[in-house]
Image (cartoon, rainbow, N blue to C red; front, side, top):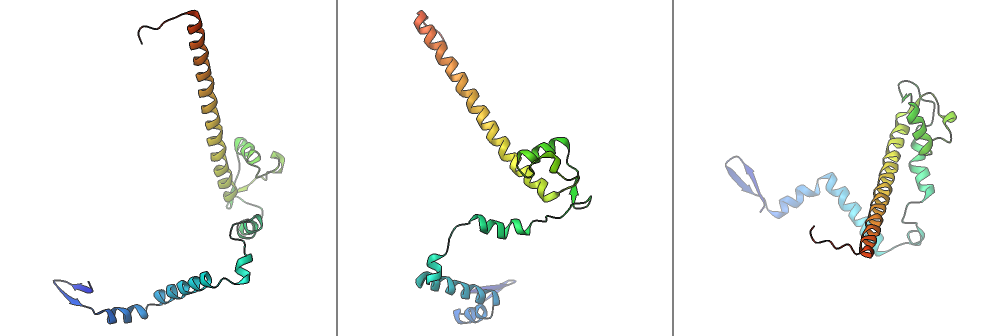
Length: 158
């Protein structure tokens, strides 16, 4: 169980030697300290922890994500020139209020956000199209079956 292999032979390490090696590992010490802090917080929640919000809020998002985004003017190295369709998509995804507000160069990060949002738009649009087409076809088939049944058509062979 505590064997360390060196080539063809192995040596046995006692648990105390293994614990001594583990005790000098700085990563193990840091993990143990963090584990102890978490256990202490779970056992003795302070008044501050009881009032703390445990989910992300709009203000948290603004502090962590939006404040870290690059908002300056883009140039040919930090951005790209959007095409006519990309300008439409930038407005559809509400990254810019209108096509006139889109600068000549748009940051790569903004274009990536546009692509991510358009992926969602296309998935939702395709799902709505599929289910509406399926519903219309099913309804037409039900009407045809009802019409044939009322006319007395009997199907003998499929």
